[in-house]
Length: 266
Image (cartoon, rainbow, N blue to C red; front, top):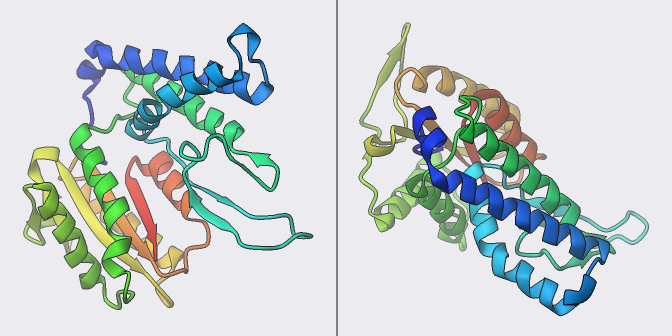
């Protein structure tokens, strides 16, 4: 999603080395906390160090594109509510039904380190999100669902209108349904384009009769068309409860196509 560092920029940018060092330091602290290895510094001091690094580490993870939200439920014998879309960093010290989120955090941090190390070596197999692109992603994630707190959207255009309001609030210079790309006999028009970021944004509304398989089919066609003109693609999917495994859809589209898919549940 958004503007990504070029191969040359990645190899020269000292911020990448700083992020790798930050993530490695945090990984070791998190491992010690999970294992109960407090040493001479004590438990409270170790917790303080982890808290000090949590916010910048989470930001580095977001820029690497490796953040995963978690769905956690109680054992079948116990039953109860399922916690959805949990941020493992914001719940780092919490346990749910006796299960710590720290192993998941460690996996995410390891993946982030891999992304940054590949970028530092000039690899074209990974891409890093710019601050501007990350701001768009974060603002939509935080603000889109509250836009429909009273009534769920019925039409995709309602979601488009809400996203337009968010982009305007951010001060993003964009066009809505103005740019057209022609591939073969098909003319395609992204919902939003941000020329400065070489970014196309496409909105999807997931509802009964328009579920994950249909949306993925549409995204596949969009990717083929839009990649011929825009370097970066972002899909915003507002889900009315029909996408069973949103994390898999996000992960697989990033892995296979290098595109960002943000799924916001109503």
